[in-house]
Amino acid sequence: MDFSQYQGPVAEWEDFMRLTGFVQPPAPTITPQELRRATNSVRVSAAQKVLKETAGLENVTWRDFSILTRDFQNIIARVYKPKAHQAESTPLPVHLYFHGGGYLFGTVETEDASRARAVASYPSPGYIVVSVNYRHTPEYLWPTQFNDAWDSFEWLTAHISDIGGDPSRVIVGGISAGAGLAAAVVTKHNELAQADQLGELLPIKGQILCCPWLLHPSANPFPKTEFSSFSQNQLAPVLPWSSLKRFADLLGPTAVNDAYFNTALNQAEKIKGMPKTCFLITGQDLLRDEGLSYAEKLNENG
Image (spheres, rainbow, N blue to C red):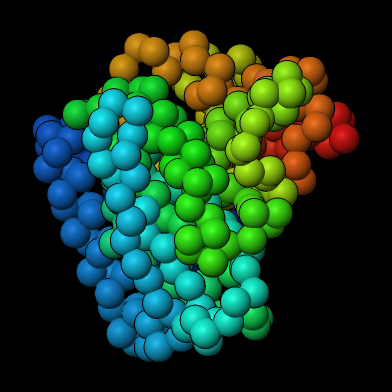
């Protein structure tokens, strides 16, 4: 397997890096909690700056909902809707969204700009985004994150009409770690569908996997040749190996062999019947090969 033709970098990326500077891996002495506070603070500030500069809230409303998890904790789902549709009774498509951040970073606030702008810029009548603040490491080990993601899908099933969503038009997606959660939710949903055990659960029309993290590094079966993304991108500017290793270690031991974490290893029998998938893959990324190989596998299985 050789996807090195996508390595790049392209000219646009080189220009961007010249303007913004190289993103160094975190200092090894900083604690995960300190790193999370600092990173989330920067992301929230950036989101608020973008919202202010683009008047991103003028055409969007949002409301926070509380989701009761299976272990009787509460997580937040922020629901974004196009303001122009508030008085309409026609239900809208729904995107159940999980943020990225290595299962360590991210909140609903860090996603405000990207989610609000996506809703605001979509052609009328628009769609709804349900952004889920699943729980993070190091306080919560895997599979808490997956359980929260699945519980949020069950919550959406019960409340989609309450938020004005169309039960027949639901997609699941995310970025990086969040894309891994989306892939896991779709995998479990497809397993239940194959076993005729979906019951009242919503159908899933599609999944969106952006820079997806679909394999634990310790379970990665791809050879570490000079052409592999792991060999080429050890010092990648956004996600170097030092960061990915820290994220993986914080998940705990269960993630290493968990099928819902390692969805890139899904075999043909698990894939058949899955909904259509949209991938966003980046060339200079440790996760490139697992994303492209999963895309190939989905294509091979219809």
